[in-house]
Length: 313
Image 1 (cartoon, one colour):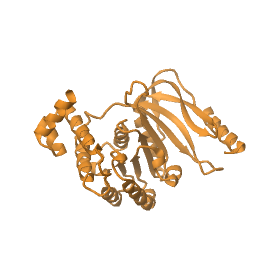
Image 2 (cartoon, rainbow, N blue to C red; image 1 turned 180 degrees about the vertical axis):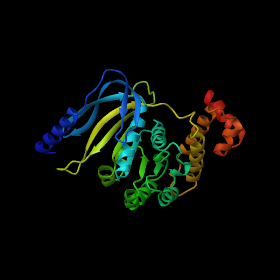
Image 3 (cartoon, one colour; image 1 turned 90 degrees about the vertical axis):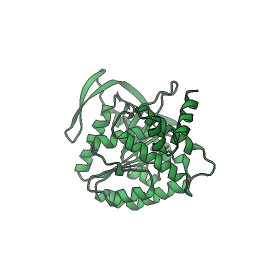
Image 4 (cartoon, rainbow, N blue to C red; image 1 turned 120 degrees about the vertical axis):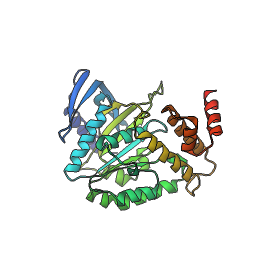
């Protein structure tokens, strides 16, 4: 990257920084552009890496909030929808970091009556959700661990997504895509259609889950690469006790078993069983019996009992 372009990009980030003001720690009302207000806890001001320009890394300051920030962001998405725009959000992070949890919280914050049919894992279900969508609907594409499957499966989803972009825009849909890394998504979609990028991570040293960084895509009129303005970080809790969770886990279990028997599954991959066990254990934490957990994931009670014993041991 030449020095002129590098300096221009750094100046743009400095201008974005001037717009930000941070209060003292406490509870404050956050008002979205759609008029909704949430009382969010502001913990502190943090510094987050935003972009690498040549040999220089750009850092930005932002506020660190509780998970009420998700509701604030949902209000911003509703406002965009009401103004005639679609919303495409990518949620990234390493395996079991909480990507699906954040995606579900975002979808439910926008629509508390969200139908389980709008949570898709399979290409067919994704296509059906788009085809049956009403104006302003929310659709979530959860990869359930893309590393389980061959690249052909993921590439096929992106081909289908490109074909559906016109419908998504025309219907003012909100599409939340869960994937391991932002670079897994087609560059044209990532840099020209995605509005928000939420990256989820475990705390580096303690491995405690429940932390996310929100960035907004800001168009760059001079270069094709956009600016990813860091808006905030937030902390979130699990959804184990949420009434939506049992239905989600059941659908996810059915998907993982089905994918195990398709051409898209990477041969010799043992992650299928690991995911099924994890789903069953999460269901168990909700207070369900061994038999109910075994029925959920399609094994007999003795098998689940053995899993549970091995896990405790």
